[in-house]
Image (tube, rainbow, N blue to C red):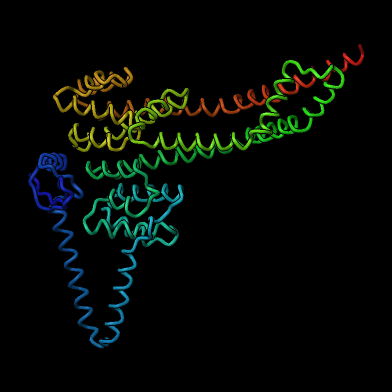
Amino acid sequence: MALFLYKALAGDGAVTSGELTAQDRSEAIRVLDKRGLQPVSLKEKSAATHKDNKLKKQKQAKSGAKSGAKGETKASTKTSTKAATKSQTGKQEIPAGGVKLKRQEVILFTEELSEMLGAGLQLEPALRSMESRQELGSLKEVSQSIRQIVRDGSPFSSALQKVSPSFDQLYCSLAAAGEASGALDTILKRQTQYLKTVAELRSKIILAMIYPAFLVATGVLVAVVVVTVLVPQLTALMQSTSGGELEGGLALIVGISDFMKEWWLVIILVLVAAGLFFKVWKNDERNRPTWDKAKLDIPLYGDVQSSRFYVQLLETMANLVANGMPLLRSLELCRDATLNEYFRENMNKVIDLVGDGRSLSRSLIRVGIFPSLLVDMVAVGEQTGQIDSALRRAADRYDKELNKSLQAIMALIMPVILICMSVLVGGMVYIMINAILDSVSSVGG
């Protein structure tokens, strides 16, 4: 049996600390969970005692050095004390609205912190190391503020929310799951991969959209020239040669042109009002599950959202269970890290079923939104007693599916835009050429 020192959060948010006896770290986490406590830090007392003795020796050495430097004046001592107090006060101040970070800065912060935690550093020394770096820019201020809040006893995830809005709800929820399971370095490493994938995807989309955007701008310009310049001239020609009658597609284009000229302001106002109404409706808490479910029905985009949810769920669950977190608590943390309200509602159903004593695989089947392959892989993990390994294999499988969906979207962007522009511009040119040929034939007749 080993003696562990812990600091944990109670159900009311209060920070408590103490000692407990357990076989290993996993059993200690389970004991804290039974007590209703969420661990913030957990370490064996032997290691902690060694560290405390080392700190005492360092303090004694510093005390001896101070006693040997009696020549220091009282005034200089007061001045240095005031400067230290001012510096400490500056560290604790957080700008209104938090510190804004760029996407690359968030990725760098996550990557640096995960590497240091994975190397064995505790959270506060790791943040102090980042704070002392010279090339991190705004991240030094963020690391400093987070370290101050964590040192005062607050969880790392809460410190992230207070310091910078650039750490979104998903990021903070995953950080809370990592703290609770003792696998913060693994969770952050996975989050680094996810953030890098999103950033790479955005850069690819921007590069892939340059040429289509040029085509769209050119097509719109051609359409404007046709409607405002060529159509009126062609209309005058047709009316002078064919008795003033416009037929077929040319009549449709002329009608659209006249309508746009007369009602363009009303059309813009209607579009703006519709956009504002949709935004208000979408952001209403009562309508969010409906909208989140509707997004899943969009071709290709819905597959990307579903695969992303499955990868995040399975990977987070695997890390939590592998680090000794009870299954029910792991599901609750995964639900808190889910942004899609439709998936959150179904996760609540899974939690209720598992809480009633059903297995995870049967609960997933009962809810009915999870793919059969995912359920089968979870069932195999339950039967073999290696559910964490089964969850990781399932996560890798759906990670590949996610990459396939993203590649399909990237491959379809260019052809779809080309087809749309060809139909728009080609259709207008075809109608105008037919109208010109009709007018020439009527003049020749």
